[in-house]
Amino acid sequence: MTDDAILCLEEVKESMDHALQHLDKEFLKVRAGKANPSMLAGVRVDYYGVPTPIERTANINTPDARQIIVQPFDKTTIHAIEKAILAANLGFNPQNEGEILRINVPPLTEERRHDMVRKAKSIVEETKIGIRNARRAGNDEAKRLEKDGIAEDETKHLVDEIQKLTDQYIEKVDHLFTLKEKDIMTV
Image (cartoon, rainbow, N blue to C red; front, top):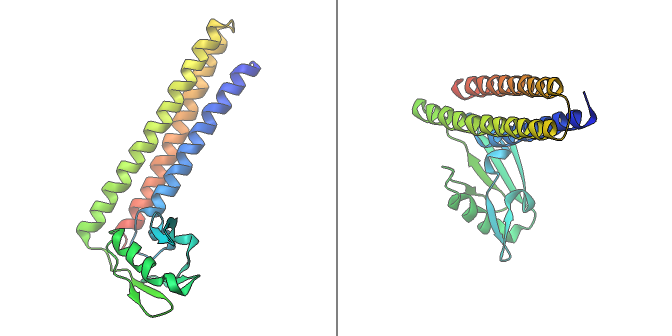
């Protein structure tokens, strides 16, 4: 393969890696019944007038599978953090214990578990679209390289390699979804 073809293949792989990383981040937000600090990812606290991610305002940990403890770095912001968690509409009702917020994570109902699986499935579809977009961009680049003078068999080989890469990444995504679905449906 020519240097241009190898570079094209590496760019496609990098785009597909980004899609997988995005999937991992999104899956952390999908609740699977066990308490996890990432459940609060995306919560923004009004920290002295500036919307700030909750993880920058407090220490968040899980002492067991049913609780999340939020300990503010600055004790005076505990009410703002409590308000932000309630406003995020995550279905949590934090208990203010003065210096910490205790969040009891309720067990998921069967219906809620199915909703979570549907949400995970839609995240998977978005990821697959990202992977296919990377494939299309790679194939377009291969056609451009052919116009610029690389051999036709070289282009065909590049397109075949891009397709193999796409198939591998789609398979990884399906495997990750199977694991996540099993995690969500496990009581």
